Length: 220
Image (tube, rainbow, N blue to C red; front, side, top):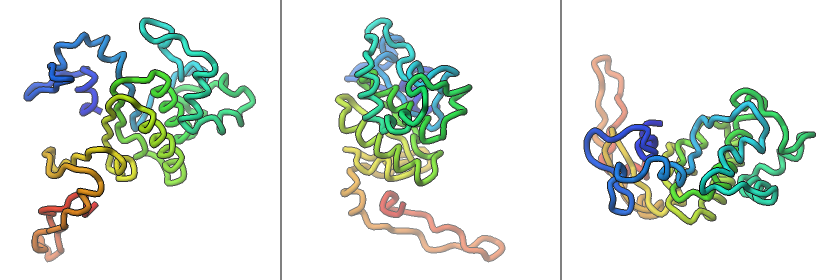
């Protein structure tokens, strides 16, 4: 998570710089900055309370107005969560248990998406939001993420190993060993031919994975 916590200013950079609208991130009031950030992580924190209270947690204070029931259900619809919530006898008032233990991984992720969407953040951070899910839950959560990105009016930064999460992004930056190796849209990156080094063998005569020279994204 440290890569996105730099943007949230839980840590400050020790070298280089991060700017927002041309201004150093450290120049912004940290509390005001975080109010404009929404996060959907690989392992989201749900509190030992109801679904509704987890979605609206912290709202009704400062610039975040208290949402109406229509606002809450609209966020649930966009997060592809309404259907499973309505299967519970207590609906939005269903108790989720410690860290959301009473919900499946896919259900927890969709609650986290609803929580991010209802705040209408300026900066949306998606950090491996589908990586811990099985293929069935991944599809459901990906539908919700696609809707969220279409409705989002600010900037969204997606970090992922699964290409389904990022293929619709305007710009994709490919990292290898901590360095940027490619940049472009999904279609542009697929045009880069895959070139690899010649196959090498270790001391035991076993073939080592060929190192990619160009076409990192295409190769994935």
